[in-house]
Length: 232
Image (cartoon, rainbow, N blue to C red):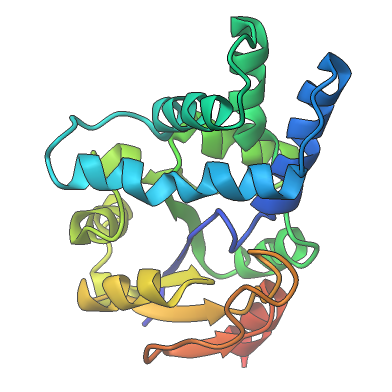
């Protein structure tokens, strides 16, 4: 019954923590700024859900994730006492989220899946962000879907159902793939099928999810394993 596979991106397909730490060091270290770069990445990411919750709760109108990331960046720069960073550097650093590297299994896994299934991101990331990650990592999407299309942020049900509807599919014909149990629980509540991909080092060594904490249709260690399982 599954006709499309749709994917969470940050953490599931790309290693945001290592990539953001690298990009922050490259941008700020030449300016004489010395930080724990992984902690800086964590602090930036920690602002992610609170910023989206302001949109989900109606306290802030919908805006692209790039805009939320920029607001969050300004917050953590102030927190770290970095108050005089020029605008050009801030813009470049904010676009670090467009330069994240994929986990090694992802590109070959997506290439295997696309032989049989429609593929798209179902991410909170905006369209231009998803396009740039795809071009950087060789993701061959059939469409770019998710939050910007739905004008809402996960885990709101409309993000999942709008993604399925964009392919003219029923929710149950769409498989949501993610490394986060909360994402999959929300997708399942919206009627989608679900697949968990373990990313045990997403938040740092051993700090990501190793196994789902919610019922799922599939649980795998890689996108390549998922492709093989769906072909079986």
